[in-house]
Image (tube, rainbow, N blue to C red; front, side):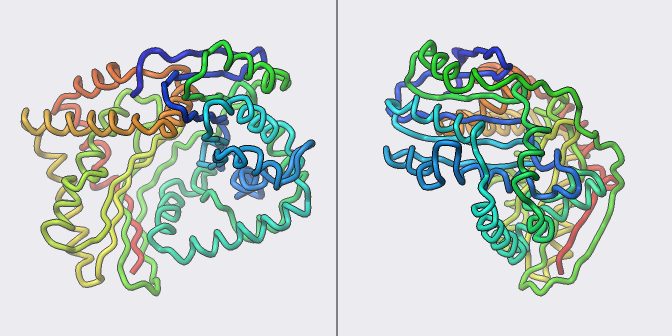
Amino acid sequence: MISSDFLTYTLGNGIRLIHQPTLSPVAHLGVLINTGSRDEAEEEHGLAHFIEHSVFKGTRKRRAFHVLSRIEDVGGELNAYTTKEETTLHSTFLREDYERAAELLSDILFNSVYPQKEINREKEVIAEEINSYKDSPSELIFDEFEELIFDGHPIARNILGTSENISQFNRDSILNFIERNYHTDQMVISSVGKLKFDRLIKYAEKHFGSAPAKIRTENRKPFDNYVPGNRVEDKDTFQSHCMVGNIAYDVQHPKRVVMVLLNNILGGPAMNSRLNLALRERRGMAYNVESNYTAYTDTGLFSVYFGTDRENFEKALSLVKKEFRMLRENKLGALQLSKVKKQMIGQIAISTESHDDLMLAIGKSYLLYNRVDPLSEVFRKIEAITEMDLLEVANEILDENRLSTLVYK
């Protein structure tokens, strides 16, 4: 579980290190970089994700096969992912292989050479990834909804990019993006495992400390011109798919925790969420219905997704809006409020039992806030939420006049 005994250190070049000691024989190490798809220029659309794929294709001292084998030969795993604001490289391994993992992540991050032959092959892989994604309307609609919400802003663009853009990428495209966006003061090494902190510092200094300092001096272009929109698209699908939502609070906003709780009540992962009960359990109208809240640097997004038979679509949408209205108009009773808080506290506590997820969570918190709250502080913030806090946030975010809708029919 998250505890208050996080250990932190900053290298001379600005890279920050955070470590959570455990007793497990399995360890987790990652490098989180505060750079993602929203940092691309228009002609670079898809480049951050393309780099995440290409970073494993060879370094100054290793070919692609040897990059993968270095950690897999000892039973470990190597992976990466890209979001709109982050790029993360991470590994899971036996604790005796800590330095092997640290050295490999450093080699990939700082010494990748991006051979053109490998780049050309990876273009084909990502083109297939894009085609697969286009074949899945329940995935495609999420990205198209963000395009509707953040119309014209870099954060609106999907992470994968377009086949046309990707076909133009080359080694220079990659190196120019990295030079412009990978800053050492925007990097965090996150560790969860059984290792003394002084030894981890030694590994970090040895393998990451020699990278030259690069400090970010420019801020991201803010998003501040939301206009609600509604769009219906004809798709050759068996179901109607729908997204409804609004902009929401950014990562620093004081109402962010209240928004997380409201989202959990409405359409969180539990089967007893209000939307799941209203659409699936009581009426059998949907197999999948969910709500999501994503906080970005300067804005946020709240959305509800559901898929249903065409003849049930209007009824399902009216039920979603009915749940919105009930949360706007009716305060939760003391018992209800206590239950939803307890549910969320339990979900958070259980999630920290996955040490891989814990490593990524503390790394992201340290990257964004330069701190990690212990579970006791997280729980205190949840317990402090009042029924009026929830009512106020519901009236701001679930305001019918501020909602946007995207429908695939």
